[in-house]
Image 1 (tube, rainbow, N blue to C red):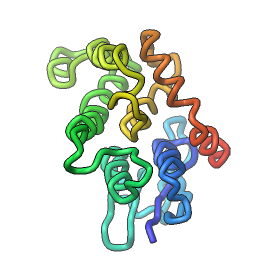
Image 2 (image 1 turned 180 degrees about the vertical axis):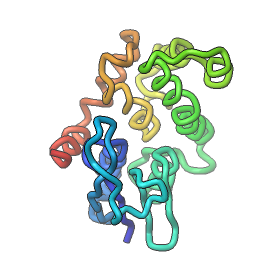
Image 3 (image 1 turned 90 degrees about the horizontal axis):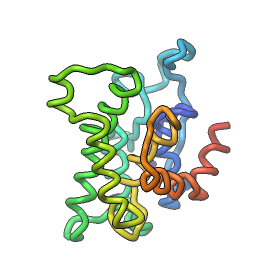
Image 4 (image 1 turned 45 degrees about the vertical axis):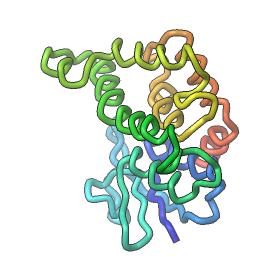
Length: 197
């Protein structure tokens, strides 16, 4: 059986949402662990096998997956019935992989740099800047309700997560705000909030 190491109200909460969306909660054991928090609370939990003491961390006992984009890809491939991640051969597979990678390679770094007001030409050349990343989302979402078109996917869940977490700390235009609201209003989001307490 799969085990997800999860800390409430953390990055791993979006994996909980995905498990609910995949109707896979009965096939994954959820182990709550402690993590160091930005406010100084929490601590590294010896029960957490993640090599850096972070979450999420997913294992079946032999295979181990860390980083949300990789975990979401792993789970949507493992539980394809919900249709939340295009499988190999699907014409949208490349877009799906691109968005999952774009989140971790572009959006999260520029969002953190923007939030803490860190600027440097080398950082902008490497990651782009916050406004460029937001324009990319705006261009896509002005034409369709979700990143892959008409259907919600794990890419929407992953990429909307920092907007939900940081709220007004991540400014966005109305079309992106409407998309965040669509993602945030899914019943699985309310379920995860209740689960986390």
